[in-house]
Image (cartoon, rainbow, N blue to C red; front, side, top):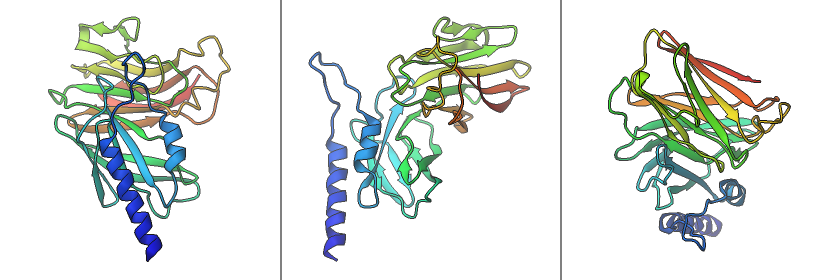
Length: 266
């Protein structure tokens, strides 16, 4: 009984600290990144808590006051977008997933899976899309780990345009690269305001950091994840293959309005 009470008190203390935590500032006054994977290792385990972070897919800033539901438990994100929940019970020794729902004013209510490997949290940050103006809008969000520092999102239309950090806008289909991230984790986000039902599109991720190393395995180890939002919800989630060489991840194509996963490294 005493041990149970002690664990409960510890969890309440960690939850309070999560809510009160504020962004860490450098000497120059700029926000300094939190090492999210070090955080995973520091608080994992049945007696600790599950720390997750939620960010705006357009600005990259923490989402404050969002509600997170996981296995019957709820908590709200603090000023750093962080929430602390009880560690899930009975995780499988191999791969496992647990359902999560995120809700916040002005954002798409997002139902997704939190992934675990060997009873360890695979990644703890999620970039959530603000609500889209119309059902015709499509938003693609790329998140990854601390390395490689620079992964680039590319969206192209056959016979039309190629959106990337080089060309960020196209009046055709009203496409825009909303955010380009060059120092790890993401998000990198592309919004398509008008999808051509007859158009043929492709989305891929390029490891710019290792652009001169064709046999690099860094992309497969990046923990990259692509989420596609549209019609008021999360439509698709794609994860980079965990093994293989290559600097390009072919994520999905769109033909006749249908999204088709590819999942190849080259």
